[in-house]
Amino acid sequence: MLVVGGGPAGIAAAIAAARSGARTRLVERYGYLGGNLTAGLVGPCMTSFSLDGSEQLIRGVFDELVRRMAELGQARHPSEIPAGSAYSGFIEFGHDKVTPFEPEAVKLVAERMCQEAGVELLLHSFVADVCTEGGAVTGVVCASKSGLRLYPARVVVDCSADADVAVAAGAESVTGRESDGLTQPMTLFFRVRGVDDERVEEYVRGHPDDFRPFASIVAAATAEGRFPAPRRGVGMYKTLRRGVWRINTTRILGRDGTDVADLTAAELAGRDQVDRLVRFFRAELPGFAECELLDTAATIGVRETRRIVGEHVLSLADLQRGTHFDDVVALCGYPVDIHDPTGAGGGVDDSWGTANAYEIPYRSLVPVRIDQLLVAGRCLSATHEALAAIRVMPPAFATGEAAGTAAALAARLGVTPREVPVGELQRALLAGGVYLGRTTGPASSPQPAP
Ligand SMILES: Cc1cc2nc3c(=O)[nH]c(=O)nc-3n(C[C@H](O)[C@H](O)[C@H](O)COP(=O)(O)OP(=O)(O)OC[C@H]3O[C@@H](n4cnc5c(N)ncnc54)[C@H](O)[C@@H]3O)c2cc1C
Image (tube, rainbow, N blue to C red; front, side, top):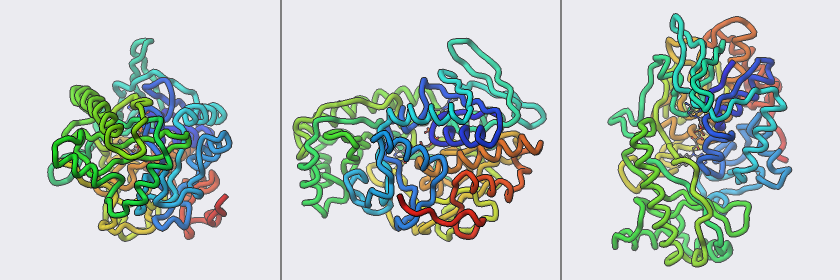
């Protein structure tokens, strides 16, 4: 089988498939794994716990990767990170038990885990087209320095985040808000070094009325037309390195992450905002006077593009009710997090009323009509609002692990992914250390926190 995209979903899909005994190839366009974990400089990983922080819901490959990075001193286990901490961007709601990590460690540890599982890695390869036969995907075409090559596969798992394979295969997809098709804005992440960590903490804790860190300073500068990005505060996350912070504050509105001209324009606009933000930080933010740019992400961060139409479209109501699905394959507690597609507002807020823990069904990974294809990560089947909750990295790992396990099972049983017996799939997931709630299977009792 073949996994397209080596981000959180693809890493987990490939490892799970290979561990399940399938000959597995993982195709990634960059020279390293990680997707937004590495190329996007995105972090920390948002919560893998229930909304109240009491129970770890996302375990399996995600937890293994985190623990191995922690052993190298390159990550902290989420159980150690409380809401409102500097690692959580000083945000309380929805930001309990996040995972700070170093991007370089993801590259190394994910590669090792893939190799140990027997995954065949194919880096520097962009999937440009697919082959289909009678409504089923039979392989992908990669463009690389070696030219155009066809890679046949019995089952393909699309973890491209943009549903590249599914759309090329003719699968039904939708984009953005149901009302007008607009998507969440893009952000070019960057890191600064030379920050006075203690001074920042002292200032932010001393201004509890600020909606987000430095919100009143940003508001005043915005009113005078001096703040370089449409934002209401500074999205900033302390890292494991002294004086180094990740900055999630640029904002590029109205661009399409599947249009190369828009992606180009967004990169240029993002870099310009970074330059102006760093100058602003040095001049006006307490604790940032000596800071300098460490790096910008290798790619603009795209929050939302296409998502497939699957056998089940996960909805906001499912997240609010905590709907129990017989084919549950992942649990999640992260709330709805919509950055305003048209302005400065948005982000996590508690008005959506999502459940403390909610479920993702297998059917949301199965596209209607097209066979021999599964989809995981940011492009699975969900509404705009539901996707805004499950788009973060731990759920992407979880759905990837489910898809990879299912693909291997389909290949072994000689059935299509649509026909995979869900009981058998759930047993395989539980055996791999996945948590499916207290009611699904005997092996699903909660693990003690480390
Ligand atoms: C600005 C921004 C801020 C965010 N903040 C956070 C945060 O703080 N914490 C959090 O947990 N989540 C955050 N997220 C969400 C999260 O990063 C993504 O939704 C998540 O990474 C999705 O995982 P994925 O595996 O589906 O996709 P990705 O991480 O995008 O990985 C997709 C992979 O597929 C590869 N690929 C794509 N197309 C092809 C192709 N055709 N051929 C070959 N390879 C291909 C890409 O190179 C990439 O490696 C943020 C996202 C953005 C954009």
